[in-house]
Image (tube, rainbow over all chains, first blue to last red; front, side, top):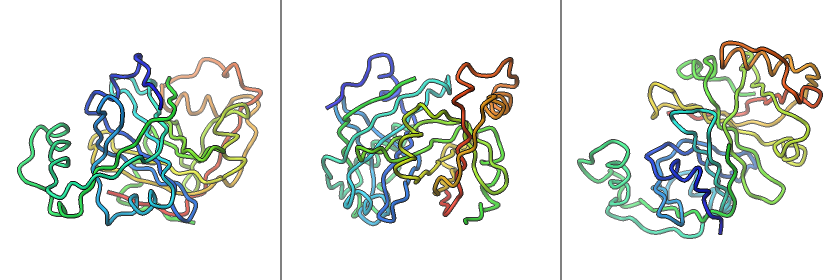
Length: 129
Length: 129
């Protein structure tokens, strides 16, 4: 398991947007912006069982994030890893935790709470600039 | 070839940072922030023959970018595609064009000009939010 370099750890500790890359069954890459929470060891994302990224990860667990420093767009951290666990989040509690973290408040569970899961990514390597 | 939706075309026309995903020979995904130029049809990046992404693309031409609106982090465009061409840029002229576009000026060719190439990505599909 990879250790996050101290020099760039703050990029995982802040409420920054991560661009998460996975591989689609058609062989093309999928990249999109995501909320995340770094628990000191793994990177956790809220997602649902009904969407494309969930299906991608069933076939290929590779997942990598790129996070740019919002105050310096030439400073970034890449964390490469794989899906290590899927945790059910049937009340949407983790979604609400991230919503509060990123927007400051969370009024209600998401409408798709029943399908919500937490994707847990275990870091294997990092790159920085 | 994919058409870029008019609703999100401005994200490709501005000097925004793209997070570019490729697939590494070890099966992990590589994602990092990149300058780019959209020529109305293809997306062009400056790169060198000596770096990891160039090697990744030799083995697997899949490449996808995610671009977030700097004024609204919940609005984004994903362009999925493949490498269609590699153009030599031995004077670093394209690097300097991007440097001017992103930083406003370019004093001199990059020190690695001799190895510089333009990676040309042809869009095959898009997603937006």
